[in-house]
Each structure stands twice: as structure tokens, then as C-alpha cells.
Image 1: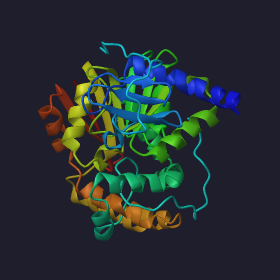
Image 2 (image 1 turned 90 degrees about the horizontal axis):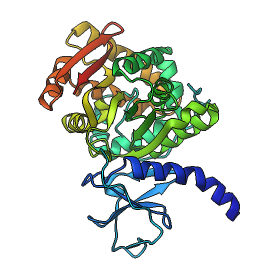
Image 3 (image 1 turned 180 degrees about the vertical axis):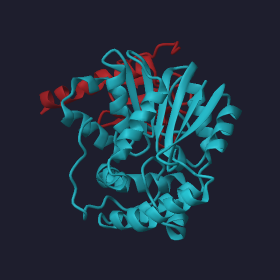
Image 4 (image 1 turned 30 degrees about the horizontal axis):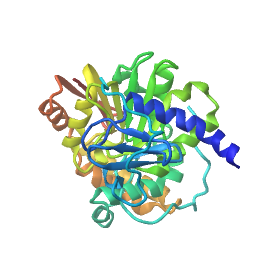
Amino acid sequence: MVKGSKALLCPAADAIKRALSDFLVCPLSKQPLRFCERTQSLVNDALGVSYPIVDGIPCLVPKDGKLLDDPGVPQSDPNSTDPSSNHR
Amino acid sequence: MASSFSLSPTSPAAASLSASHRGPATQHSSASVGFRGSPERQALFSRIAPAYDNLNDLLSLGLHRVWKRMAVSWSGAKKAERVLDLCCGSGDLAFLLSERVGPQGEVTGFDFSKQQLLIASARRDLSGKTCYKNIMWVEGDALNLPFPAYYFDAVTVGYGLRNLVDKRKAMEEIFRVLKPGSRASILDFNKSSNAFTTSFQEYMIDNVVVPVASTYGLAKEYAYMKTSIQEFLTGKELEKVAKEVGFSNAKHYEISGGLMGNLVATR
């Protein structure tokens, strides 16, 4: 089951990493997002908001963002991918 | 383009009303009251998602495919470019754009209905076409786009702008994410200034669209269409708003005898 899950996640993870590093920004502040591999979410550290990724589809609806001080949302993640600083 | 799912007329989606997105929908007063806000419209389009593709084909006699190809042509999208299909729904325009920009290009299909996006994603997987690998599906709010400024070479919107609660804000966001010199191609019903055209549209909605949709249990959702057209902007008004938000040029083209229209705005 773990191997199957990993196989399923790999294409989505690749797409998400491409999206994160290439173009997705926070819908509220338009700032870059950090991809958290552990929770498979996109994080705006400046605003303290995270957005989930469900079924391989990033959900960047402002009202669905979770505050980072929520118990279920990570504050920092050593495995997370740092976003590029320039999206243009 | 991948074929749409086959559905029985009795397959409804989940309850909760509200939506904003493209596609036909009708019914007057009672339905319009229930679809005022974005959450209500979002739920509407999630509810019609399973029947959406079939109804598009039935209600337009397949012509929606022609209109969408025209919209993609007007967008000016080319090979290896980076394009956005806003309010992508089940993906018709995204798939056309994918074929146009090719494997070196990038297509983002953006919608606020997870159900529509899941159908789009499934259609892509079922098609087996490798060229569709250049499509990324993103769920979000068209009034708060999660993309940087000057990012896309073209933006298309198919039957989406009419359903957004703030058309000007949507146009501002489309303008923001477009590269200078690039185009937005926005296809939708035409709110005609011609009384005959308007009467014909309303007659078809009342006597064809709603009865057909009712066989899928979606009469009320599709009845919303008439009100949404009444509350939409005319071609001239769309051109005016586009120029006010910053587009250097905006031209609205009427097609199919004025029943449909396509706004082409250049940043």
C-alpha cells in the first residue's frame, strides 16, 4: 500500500513542485508559496496561511486557507521546498 | 478532445445552490434568487458537473465545440506558450489550448468547482493523449488569481465571466496576469441589444433548455441561465470595462446570429 501510494503521489508531486517553483502564488498577497512535502500543502509564511492539495489539485481558494497557528498546520518543515524568489 | 461521460437523465449531484462558471443554465425569478452569491453558484456548477458535457452537446447541437475553437483562435495562443483557461469547468477549452501550445507549452485549467476539475482531470486521463500532460488543474477564486503578474501569453474564458459576481474585478485580474501585448478571449452568451434576439434566446431557454435539463433533474439550475444573461453586460459594455481596467484594445464579436459573443481584449 505504501509503495502504491508513493507511485500515485509521484506524478502529482512532480506537478506540484513544478507549479510551486514556476508560478503559483498566494491568492491574497501574490507572494511565493512554500511547498510542504509532509502535509502536501502550499504555505505562505509571511501571512501564516497554508492551502491544501487534494487529489493532486492545489486548492488556492482564499477562504479555504488555514492559519499556520492551527494545530494541524506545520510552522516549518525542514523538507519543504523553498520557492524561487522571482516569478517573472 | 476527450469525449464526455455518458449519464442517465436521473443522475443528480450534491445539493447546495450557488455557482459561478460557464455553461448554460436557466430559470427565472425563483432560481435567480437562489444563485446570487458565489458560494451558491459554485454549488450549482458542482451539482450540474456530471451532466454538464452531455447537456452542452444537446442544448447547442454540438455548436459549442465550434464556438470554443473560435475562442481559442481569437486568443492568439501559439506553440510553446503559457496559457490560462479561467473557469475551465470540465476542460473543453483547456484541451483545445493544450493541442495548440503543444508539449513545450503550459496550460493551466482554473476553476472554483472541485467536481468540475475532477471530471476534467478524469477526461484527461481517459483520453490517453500524451499532449494533455501539459495541463495543470488548479482550484481557486477567479477574483483572486494565484498567479504572478505578466505571466500568461493568453487567457481564455468560456461561459465563465457571466457567472462571476464581480465582472470588473475578474477583468482586472485577467489583465494583471497577462503579459503586455497578449490577449484575453472571453466567450459567452451575448446580451443582445436586439429585442428579437433577446426574445429568441429567452424562448429557447424556457422551451428547450429547461425542459431538456429537467430530464437530468436540473431544471432549476439551468433556469438560472436566463437571469444570468439578463444581468450580464452587453458587448459594448464589456468593451468599455475592458478598456477601463487597462486593456489597450477591446472588441466584442457577435457569433451565431448574435446568440453568442466573444470579447477579444489586448493588454
